[in-house]
Length: 433
Image (spheres, rainbow, N blue to C red):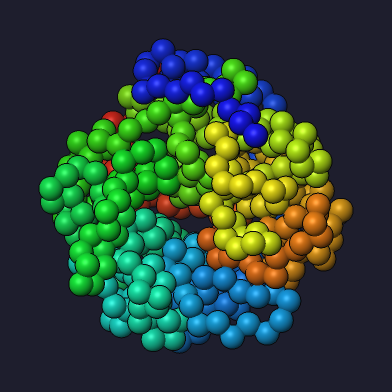
Protein backbone atom coordinates (compact mmCIF):
# COMPACT_ATOMS: atom_id res chain seq x y z
CA UNK A 1 0.00 0.00 0.00
CA UNK A 2 1.25 3.48 -0.81
CA UNK A 3 -0.65 5.84 1.47
CA UNK A 4 1.91 8.61 1.14
CA UNK A 5 1.39 11.49 -1.30
CA UNK A 6 4.92 11.70 -2.73
CA UNK A 7 5.57 15.37 -2.31
CA UNK A 8 8.72 16.47 -0.56
CA UNK A 9 11.14 19.36 -0.76
CA UNK A 10 14.03 21.00 0.98
CA UNK A 11 12.97 23.09 3.91
CA UNK A 12 11.93 26.74 3.51
CA UNK A 13 10.86 29.54 5.84
CA UNK A 14 7.33 29.41 4.48
CA UNK A 15 7.14 25.71 5.25
CA UNK A 16 8.31 26.37 8.80
CA UNK A 17 5.51 28.86 9.40
CA UNK A 18 2.97 26.36 8.07
CA UNK A 19 4.33 23.62 10.31
CA UNK A 20 4.22 25.90 13.35
CA UNK A 21 0.57 26.72 12.69
CA UNK A 22 -0.26 23.02 12.33
CA UNK A 23 1.49 22.17 15.59
CA UNK A 24 -0.25 25.01 17.39
CA UNK A 25 -3.59 23.64 16.20
CA UNK A 26 -2.72 20.17 17.44
CA UNK A 27 -1.47 21.51 20.76
CA UNK A 28 -4.87 22.92 21.64
CA UNK A 29 -5.84 19.36 22.54
CA UNK A 30 -2.53 18.59 24.23
CA UNK A 31 -2.73 17.25 27.75
CA UNK A 32 -0.40 19.14 30.08
CA UNK A 33 1.32 17.93 33.24
CA UNK A 34 -1.23 19.70 35.41
CA UNK A 35 -4.20 18.28 33.51
CA UNK A 36 -3.28 14.59 33.68
CA UNK A 37 -6.13 12.78 35.32
CA UNK A 38 -5.41 10.77 38.48
CA UNK A 39 -6.10 7.65 36.42
CA UNK A 40 -3.60 8.63 33.73
CA UNK A 41 -0.96 9.57 36.27
CA UNK A 42 -1.43 6.28 38.12
CA UNK A 43 -1.04 4.38 34.84
CA UNK A 44 2.18 6.21 34.00
CA UNK A 45 3.46 5.57 37.51
CA UNK A 46 2.88 1.84 37.06
CA UNK A 47 4.56 1.96 33.66
CA UNK A 48 7.62 3.86 34.88
CA UNK A 49 8.05 1.68 37.94
CA UNK A 50 8.02 -1.43 35.73
CA UNK A 51 10.46 0.15 33.26
CA UNK A 52 12.81 1.05 36.10
CA UNK A 53 12.82 -2.54 37.26
CA UNK A 54 14.36 -3.54 33.91
CA UNK A 55 17.21 -1.07 34.22
CA UNK A 56 17.85 -2.04 37.83
CA UNK A 57 17.65 -5.83 37.46
CA UNK A 58 19.14 -6.21 33.99
CA UNK A 59 22.26 -4.16 34.63
CA UNK A 60 25.36 -6.03 35.75
CA UNK A 61 26.07 -4.98 39.36
CA UNK A 62 29.84 -5.08 38.77
CA UNK A 63 30.01 -3.13 35.52
CA UNK A 64 26.74 -1.19 35.47
CA UNK A 65 26.25 -2.05 31.80
CA UNK A 66 22.63 -2.70 30.81
CA UNK A 67 21.45 -5.56 28.62
CA UNK A 68 20.43 -4.80 25.08
CA UNK A 69 17.31 -6.93 25.55
CA UNK A 70 15.81 -9.45 27.93
CA UNK A 71 13.49 -12.44 27.56
CA UNK A 72 10.63 -11.90 30.00
CA UNK A 73 8.98 -15.28 29.46
CA UNK A 74 11.87 -17.47 30.58
CA UNK A 75 15.19 -17.22 32.38
CA UNK A 76 17.40 -14.83 30.45
CA UNK A 77 21.11 -15.65 30.39
CA UNK A 78 22.20 -13.29 27.63
CA UNK A 79 25.40 -11.31 28.14
CA UNK A 80 24.97 -8.69 25.42
CA UNK A 81 24.93 -5.14 26.73
CA UNK A 82 24.12 -2.07 24.69
CA UNK A 83 25.93 1.20 25.25
CA UNK A 84 22.76 3.10 24.28
CA UNK A 85 20.67 1.05 26.70
CA UNK A 86 23.22 1.91 29.39
CA UNK A 87 22.70 5.61 28.64
CA UNK A 88 18.96 5.20 29.14
CA UNK A 89 19.70 3.18 32.27
CA UNK A 90 21.80 5.94 33.81
CA UNK A 91 18.94 8.35 33.23
CA UNK A 92 16.50 5.81 34.69
CA UNK A 93 18.57 5.79 37.90
CA UNK A 94 17.97 9.52 38.23
CA UNK A 95 14.23 9.11 37.71
CA UNK A 96 14.10 6.09 40.03
CA UNK A 97 15.85 7.90 42.85
CA UNK A 98 13.69 10.99 42.36
CA UNK A 99 10.53 8.89 42.52
CA UNK A 100 11.65 6.74 45.44
CA UNK A 101 11.99 3.47 43.52
CA UNK A 102 15.55 3.19 44.87
CA UNK A 103 17.45 4.93 47.65
CA UNK A 104 19.89 7.74 47.00
CA UNK A 105 22.75 5.62 48.31
CA UNK A 106 21.94 2.65 46.09
CA UNK A 107 21.36 4.76 42.99
CA UNK A 108 24.56 6.73 43.52
CA UNK A 109 26.54 3.52 44.06
CA UNK A 110 25.23 2.07 40.78
CA UNK A 111 26.10 5.27 38.91
CA UNK A 112 29.61 5.32 40.33
CA UNK A 113 30.08 1.66 39.45
CA UNK A 114 29.02 2.36 35.86
CA UNK A 115 31.11 5.49 35.37
CA UNK A 116 34.22 3.93 36.88
CA UNK A 117 33.84 0.96 34.55
CA UNK A 118 33.33 3.21 31.52
CA UNK A 119 36.40 5.28 32.37
CA UNK A 120 38.78 2.62 33.61
CA UNK A 121 37.80 -0.68 31.94
CA UNK A 122 35.48 -0.32 28.96
CA UNK A 123 37.31 -0.47 25.59
CA UNK A 124 36.94 2.68 23.52
CA UNK A 125 38.39 4.32 20.45
CA UNK A 126 39.08 8.04 20.70
CA UNK A 127 36.48 8.16 23.46
CA UNK A 128 33.71 6.41 21.48
CA UNK A 129 32.36 3.05 22.63
CA UNK A 130 31.39 -0.12 20.80
CA UNK A 131 27.68 -0.53 20.13
CA UNK A 132 27.43 -3.96 21.79
CA UNK A 133 29.65 -5.32 24.54
CA UNK A 134 29.91 -8.18 27.00
CA UNK A 135 27.94 -7.10 30.04
CA UNK A 136 30.64 -8.31 32.43
CA UNK A 137 33.95 -7.61 30.69
CA UNK A 138 32.94 -4.72 28.43
CA UNK A 139 34.63 -6.39 25.47
CA UNK A 140 33.24 -5.88 21.98
CA UNK A 141 30.56 -8.36 20.82
CA UNK A 142 29.37 -9.38 17.33
CA UNK A 143 32.13 -7.40 15.59
CA UNK A 144 30.05 -4.34 16.34
CA UNK A 145 31.14 -0.87 15.36
CA UNK A 146 32.43 1.98 17.47
CA UNK A 147 29.12 3.85 17.34
CA UNK A 148 28.78 7.62 17.23
CA UNK A 149 25.03 7.77 17.94
CA UNK A 150 25.03 5.10 20.65
CA UNK A 151 27.91 6.85 22.39
CA UNK A 152 25.83 10.05 22.23
CA UNK A 153 22.95 8.33 24.03
CA UNK A 154 25.37 7.13 26.69
CA UNK A 155 26.71 10.67 27.09
CA UNK A 156 23.18 11.99 27.61
CA UNK A 157 22.79 9.56 30.50
CA UNK A 158 26.17 10.49 31.96
CA UNK A 159 25.32 14.20 31.82
CA UNK A 160 21.92 13.63 33.44
CA UNK A 161 23.60 11.83 36.34
CA UNK A 162 26.21 14.54 36.74
CA UNK A 163 23.52 17.15 37.26
CA UNK A 164 21.12 15.08 39.33
CA UNK A 165 23.46 13.59 41.91
CA UNK A 166 25.81 16.53 42.42
CA UNK A 167 28.51 14.17 43.69
CA UNK A 168 32.18 15.10 43.29
CA UNK A 169 33.41 11.76 41.94
CA UNK A 170 30.46 11.49 39.54
CA UNK A 171 31.31 14.98 38.30
CA UNK A 172 35.00 14.13 37.82
CA UNK A 173 34.27 10.86 36.03
CA UNK A 174 31.65 12.47 33.79
CA UNK A 175 34.12 15.23 32.92
CA UNK A 176 36.82 12.72 32.01
CA UNK A 177 34.53 10.47 29.97
CA UNK A 178 33.13 13.41 28.02
CA UNK A 179 36.42 15.16 27.37
CA UNK A 180 38.03 11.98 26.07
CA UNK A 181 35.60 11.94 23.13
CA UNK A 182 37.19 13.30 19.96
CA UNK A 183 34.11 14.64 18.22
CA UNK A 184 36.21 16.38 15.61
CA UNK A 185 37.78 13.03 14.63
CA UNK A 186 34.39 12.13 13.13
CA UNK A 187 34.54 15.19 10.89
CA UNK A 188 38.16 15.37 9.84
CA UNK A 189 37.28 15.58 6.15
CA UNK A 190 33.61 16.55 6.29
CA UNK A 191 31.06 18.37 8.42
CA UNK A 192 28.81 15.29 8.21
CA UNK A 193 29.53 12.85 11.03
CA UNK A 194 30.32 9.20 10.45
CA UNK A 195 28.01 6.44 11.67
CA UNK A 196 30.87 4.44 13.12
CA UNK A 197 34.29 2.86 12.83
CA UNK A 198 35.49 -0.75 12.95
CA UNK A 199 38.97 -2.02 13.82
CA UNK A 200 40.82 -3.04 10.69
CA UNK A 201 38.16 -1.57 8.43
CA UNK A 202 38.03 2.10 9.27
CA UNK A 203 34.96 4.28 9.02
CA UNK A 204 31.63 2.82 7.93
CA UNK A 205 30.46 4.09 4.53
CA UNK A 206 27.53 5.99 6.03
CA UNK A 207 27.20 9.53 7.30
CA UNK A 208 24.60 11.27 9.41
CA UNK A 209 23.31 13.43 6.59
CA UNK A 210 19.51 13.58 6.93
CA UNK A 211 17.20 14.57 9.78
CA UNK A 212 16.97 11.76 12.32
CA UNK A 213 17.99 10.99 15.89
CA UNK A 214 21.27 12.70 14.95
CA UNK A 215 20.36 16.01 16.65
CA UNK A 216 21.63 14.95 20.08
CA UNK A 217 24.98 13.90 18.62
CA UNK A 218 25.61 17.14 16.73
CA UNK A 219 24.50 19.27 19.70
CA UNK A 220 26.70 17.35 22.14
CA UNK A 221 29.64 17.58 19.77
CA UNK A 222 29.24 21.31 19.30
CA UNK A 223 28.72 21.84 23.02
CA UNK A 224 31.78 19.88 24.08
CA UNK A 225 34.48 21.73 26.00
CA UNK A 226 37.17 19.73 24.15
CA UNK A 227 37.50 18.52 20.56
CA UNK A 228 34.28 20.30 19.67
CA UNK A 229 32.54 20.23 16.33
CA UNK A 230 32.36 23.50 14.37
CA UNK A 231 28.97 25.24 14.33
CA UNK A 232 28.78 24.65 10.57
CA UNK A 233 28.17 20.97 11.32
CA UNK A 234 24.62 21.81 12.44
CA UNK A 235 23.77 23.16 9.01
CA UNK A 236 25.39 20.35 7.02
CA UNK A 237 22.65 17.74 7.34
CA UNK A 238 19.55 17.97 5.18
CA UNK A 239 16.05 18.74 6.34
CA UNK A 240 13.45 17.40 3.92
CA UNK A 241 9.77 18.18 4.33
CA UNK A 242 7.03 15.62 3.83
CA UNK A 243 3.31 16.09 3.25
CA UNK A 244 0.68 13.71 4.56
CA UNK A 245 -3.04 14.57 4.54
CA UNK A 246 -2.20 18.26 4.63
CA UNK A 247 0.31 17.89 7.46
CA UNK A 248 3.82 19.10 6.68
CA UNK A 249 6.86 18.19 8.71
CA UNK A 250 10.59 17.58 8.48
CA UNK A 251 11.31 13.87 8.33
CA UNK A 252 13.11 10.98 6.67
CA UNK A 253 12.32 7.58 5.23
CA UNK A 254 12.68 6.15 8.71
CA UNK A 255 10.75 4.90 11.76
CA UNK A 256 9.00 7.16 14.26
CA UNK A 257 11.80 6.99 16.83
CA UNK A 258 13.83 9.54 14.85
CA UNK A 259 11.41 12.18 16.14
CA UNK A 260 11.76 11.04 19.76
CA UNK A 261 15.24 10.05 20.89
CA UNK A 262 17.04 13.40 20.93
CA UNK A 263 14.12 15.05 22.66
CA UNK A 264 14.12 12.54 25.49
CA UNK A 265 16.94 14.69 26.89
CA UNK A 266 17.09 17.95 24.94
CA UNK A 267 14.17 20.20 25.85
CA UNK A 268 13.25 21.86 22.58
CA UNK A 269 9.86 23.18 23.64
CA UNK A 270 9.49 26.85 22.70
CA UNK A 271 12.84 26.79 20.93
CA UNK A 272 13.73 26.95 17.27
CA UNK A 273 16.72 27.32 15.03
CA UNK A 274 16.63 28.93 11.59
CA UNK A 275 14.83 25.86 10.26
CA UNK A 276 12.16 24.69 12.71
CA UNK A 277 10.73 24.26 16.15
CA UNK A 278 11.57 20.56 16.41
CA UNK A 279 9.17 19.87 19.28
CA UNK A 280 6.32 21.16 17.16
CA UNK A 281 7.73 19.22 14.21
CA UNK A 282 7.62 15.99 16.23
CA UNK A 283 4.04 16.76 17.25
CA UNK A 284 3.00 17.08 13.61
CA UNK A 285 5.00 13.98 12.62
CA UNK A 286 3.34 11.92 15.36
CA UNK A 287 -0.10 13.04 14.24
CA UNK A 288 0.80 12.12 10.67
CA UNK A 289 1.91 8.70 11.88
CA UNK A 290 -1.35 8.22 13.78
CA UNK A 291 -3.38 9.03 10.66
CA UNK A 292 -1.11 6.79 8.59
CA UNK A 293 -1.88 3.86 10.89
CA UNK A 294 -5.61 4.57 10.73
CA UNK A 295 -5.37 4.47 6.93
CA UNK A 296 -3.59 1.12 7.22
CA UNK A 297 -6.65 -0.25 9.03
CA UNK A 298 -8.07 -1.02 5.59
CA UNK A 299 -5.42 -3.74 5.39
CA UNK A 300 -4.83 -4.46 9.06
CA UNK A 301 -8.09 -4.18 11.02
CA UNK A 302 -6.36 -4.23 14.40
CA UNK A 303 -5.25 -0.61 13.84
CA UNK A 304 -7.70 1.92 15.25
CA UNK A 305 -7.86 5.05 17.42
CA UNK A 306 -7.28 2.66 20.33
CA UNK A 307 -4.38 0.75 18.77
CA UNK A 308 -1.70 2.27 16.56
CA UNK A 309 2.03 2.86 16.51
CA UNK A 310 4.82 1.34 14.42
CA UNK A 311 8.54 1.89 14.83
CA UNK A 312 11.66 -0.26 14.47
CA UNK A 313 10.99 -3.42 16.47
CA UNK A 314 10.83 -7.17 16.73
CA UNK A 315 8.25 -9.03 14.69
CA UNK A 316 7.12 -12.60 14.19
CA UNK A 317 9.77 -12.80 11.45
CA UNK A 318 12.67 -11.01 13.12
CA UNK A 319 13.71 -7.41 13.66
CA UNK A 320 12.21 -4.93 11.17
CA UNK A 321 12.99 -1.27 10.54
CA UNK A 322 9.47 -0.14 9.75
CA UNK A 323 7.13 2.81 10.07
CA UNK A 324 5.71 5.74 8.13
CA UNK A 325 4.62 7.87 6.48
CA UNK A 326 6.09 7.27 3.99
CA UNK A 327 5.68 3.52 4.42
CA UNK A 328 8.91 1.79 5.41
CA UNK A 329 9.24 -1.98 5.75
CA UNK A 330 6.73 -4.77 5.08
CA UNK A 331 4.11 -3.66 7.62
CA UNK A 332 1.98 -6.62 8.75
CA UNK A 333 -0.27 -5.42 11.56
CA UNK A 334 2.38 -5.48 14.30
CA UNK A 335 2.01 -2.83 16.99
CA UNK A 336 4.97 -1.37 18.88
CA UNK A 337 4.14 0.15 22.29
CA UNK A 338 7.21 2.40 22.34
CA UNK A 339 6.00 4.15 19.17
CA UNK A 340 3.15 5.74 21.09
CA UNK A 341 5.02 5.89 24.39
CA UNK A 342 7.99 7.73 22.88
CA UNK A 343 5.60 10.44 21.69
CA UNK A 344 3.76 10.93 24.98
CA UNK A 345 4.82 14.58 25.37
CA UNK A 346 3.90 15.38 21.76
CA UNK A 347 0.35 13.94 21.67
CA UNK A 348 -0.50 12.95 25.26
CA UNK A 349 -4.20 12.20 24.96
CA UNK A 350 -4.05 9.96 21.84
CA UNK A 351 -0.93 8.13 23.01
CA UNK A 352 -2.26 7.55 26.52
CA UNK A 353 -5.45 6.18 25.02
CA UNK A 354 -3.44 3.65 23.02
CA UNK A 355 -1.16 2.56 25.86
CA UNK A 356 -3.97 2.11 28.37
CA UNK A 357 -5.99 0.14 25.83
CA UNK A 358 -3.03 -2.15 25.12
CA UNK A 359 -2.68 -3.07 28.76
CA UNK A 360 -6.41 -3.39 29.44
CA UNK A 361 -7.30 -5.34 26.31
CA UNK A 362 -4.26 -7.59 25.87
CA UNK A 363 -3.16 -7.87 29.48
CA UNK A 364 -0.31 -10.23 30.25
CA UNK A 365 0.10 -11.07 26.57
CA UNK A 366 1.72 -7.68 26.00
CA UNK A 367 2.67 -6.72 29.57
CA UNK A 368 5.50 -8.03 31.72
CA UNK A 369 7.32 -7.24 34.94
CA UNK A 370 9.26 -4.64 32.92
CA UNK A 371 6.27 -3.06 31.22
CA UNK A 372 5.26 -3.64 27.63
CA UNK A 373 6.96 -6.30 25.54
CA UNK A 374 8.73 -4.89 22.52
CA UNK A 375 5.97 -5.63 20.00
CA UNK A 376 2.92 -7.76 19.30
CA UNK A 377 0.57 -8.65 16.46
CA UNK A 378 -2.96 -9.51 17.58
CA UNK A 379 -3.98 -10.46 14.02
CA UNK A 380 -1.80 -13.58 14.17
CA UNK A 381 -1.80 -13.93 17.97
CA UNK A 382 1.95 -13.21 18.17
CA UNK A 383 3.36 -11.59 21.29
CA UNK A 384 7.04 -10.87 21.74
CA UNK A 385 8.92 -12.53 24.59
CA UNK A 386 11.53 -9.75 24.79
CA UNK A 387 11.78 -6.22 26.02
CA UNK A 388 14.43 -4.02 24.36
CA UNK A 389 16.45 -1.58 26.44
CA UNK A 390 16.28 1.48 24.21
CA UNK A 391 12.53 1.09 23.66
CA UNK A 392 11.90 0.58 27.36
CA UNK A 393 14.13 3.59 27.92
CA UNK A 394 12.35 5.98 25.57
CA UNK A 395 9.08 4.89 27.16
CA UNK A 396 10.24 5.67 30.70
CA UNK A 397 11.93 8.97 29.90
CA UNK A 398 9.07 10.36 27.85
CA UNK A 399 6.51 9.28 30.46
CA UNK A 400 8.47 11.22 33.07
CA UNK A 401 8.88 14.22 30.80
CA UNK A 402 5.13 14.33 30.26
CA UNK A 403 4.46 14.08 33.99
CA UNK A 404 7.06 16.50 35.34
CA UNK A 405 9.64 17.47 32.73
CA UNK A 406 12.26 16.10 35.15
CA UNK A 407 14.67 14.68 32.57
CA UNK A 408 14.50 17.83 30.45
CA UNK A 409 14.99 20.10 33.44
CA UNK A 410 17.93 18.10 34.80
CA UNK A 411 19.75 17.51 31.51
CA UNK A 412 19.40 21.09 30.27
CA UNK A 413 21.35 22.40 33.26
CA UNK A 414 24.49 21.03 31.66
CA UNK A 415 26.66 23.70 30.03
CA UNK A 416 27.35 21.30 27.16
CA UNK A 417 23.65 21.22 26.30
CA UNK A 418 23.32 24.98 26.53
CA UNK A 419 26.44 25.60 24.43
CA UNK A 420 25.25 23.14 21.80
CA UNK A 421 21.93 24.93 21.39
CA UNK A 422 23.58 28.33 21.35
CA UNK A 423 26.13 27.35 18.71
CA UNK A 424 23.37 25.79 16.61
CA UNK A 425 21.55 29.12 16.68
CA UNK A 426 18.53 28.19 18.78
CA UNK A 427 16.37 31.02 20.08
CA UNK A 428 13.20 31.28 22.07
CA UNK A 429 10.25 30.71 19.74
CA UNK A 430 8.00 33.08 21.65
CA UNK A 431 10.44 35.94 21.12
CA UNK A 432 11.34 35.33 17.50
CA UNK A 433 8.14 34.45 15.67
